[in-house]
Image 1 (cartoon, rainbow, N blue to C red):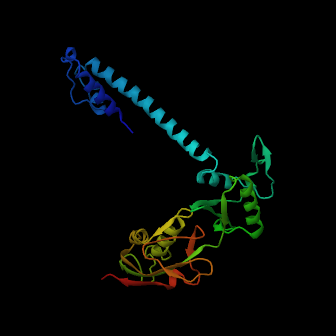
Image 2: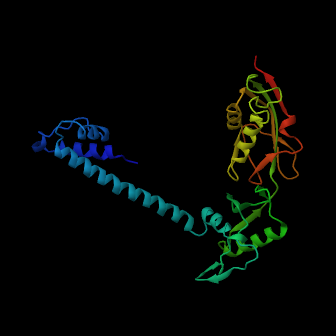
Image 3: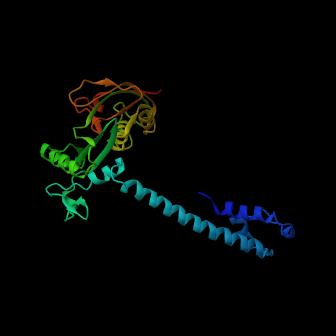
Length: 288
């Protein structure tokens, strides 16, 4: 976005085009310079202040229009029926146990019940001639979880009613993809013990916290990047040098596959394999 200074500089440049104004010579005017002049004993040229006020007013007007433009573009991108963004927005409106009705030339619910809106995660992926809709709800531990068979059937029927005619949709939900990690950590023995626990509190394991936080903070249907995971571990307290000696992932009943650079969960989210816990698969080596 343009700044007040840029508007002011443009006004000064325009002044240069008028020879009758050659006697008006600006100094290196900035917002700070004007503030300094106001508190000094010097006499500040009124014309410079007038230009700065015009520049400020222009900047306010420009900023308001930019904000309005962004709001309109966001509304437009989500409002156009048939787009991926529109469909994702509509999926979040699904209400379990309620029937859609044709109201004002569109399907909608006559009663809005936020407690019945069970879809908390959704990604709409266009694949060739079809659209895949990945969804998940929250379980009792406030973690992503797959829909039940009954819930999924109801959602599919809802999408079939609201979608554009002829659109092929594949609505899926599933258990989290599983991630298997083996790490070698060179650590600072003044900060961590041989089990990777902070000496300062005797409880926290910074490496495990870093890995779990990185996975947890991935957006739904986001991509795990190996280099980003390494960076996250590197930032953990007491870590001098981390190495990933093994990283594999799987989904459904498929076997584990090596992750080379990145991995996108088929279910939209992933967790560390409970049968392959980090606590058993991190080797700590004192960096001495």
